[in-house]
Image (cartoon, rainbow, N blue to C red; front, side, top):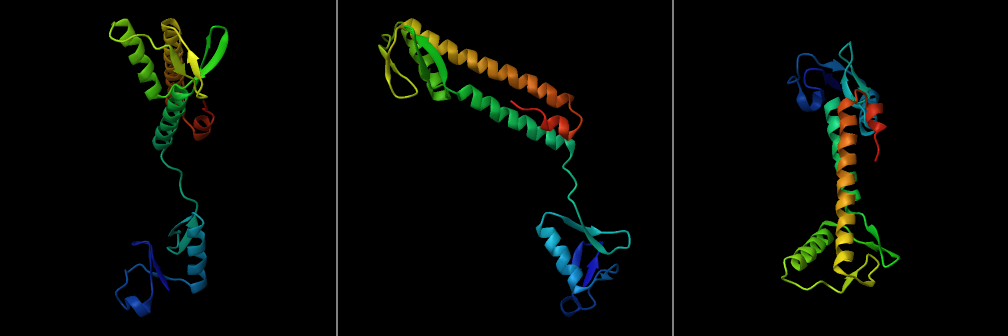
Length: 179
C-alpha cells in the first residue's frame, strides 16, 4: 500500500502497477485501515513532514463563513419572533392571535378594506386557539398594531445582534450571540 502527498491518494501495486505518482511512500495495511477509521470519525488525511499520511482534525471554517452562518441563524430567530402569536387584551380579556405572514396580511387587508369603505368591519376574528372572538374595528387595529410592534422589535433586535457579529473576532464571541 502506498500514499502520495501530491494526489492525497492511496495506491496498490496490484491495481496501479508502476503507474503511481513519483512521491509515493509505503505504508502498512494496518496504517491504511487506521487512517480510514479516523477519516470516518471526521478527521482528514494529509501528508506529514515525512510525506507519510496522518489523520488530523479538520481545520475550522474561515471566520467569515462562521459570521455568515451566525447572521443566517439570526435571520431564522428573527423570522420566528415575527411569526410568534401576539397577545392582545380585548374587552378586558387577553387573547392570543396568530401573527404569521398570512395572518398579518389578513389583518392588514381587513383594516384597509374597512377604512377604504369597501367592506364592513368583521364582527369576529378567530384566535390562535380557534375561538371566535367578538371584535370591533378598534380591536382589529389593536391586533394589527401588536403584530407590527412585534415585527419591528424583532427586526431591531436582529440588527443589534448582527452588529455584534460584525464586531466579533473569535468563534467564542460568535457562539455567545443568542436571541
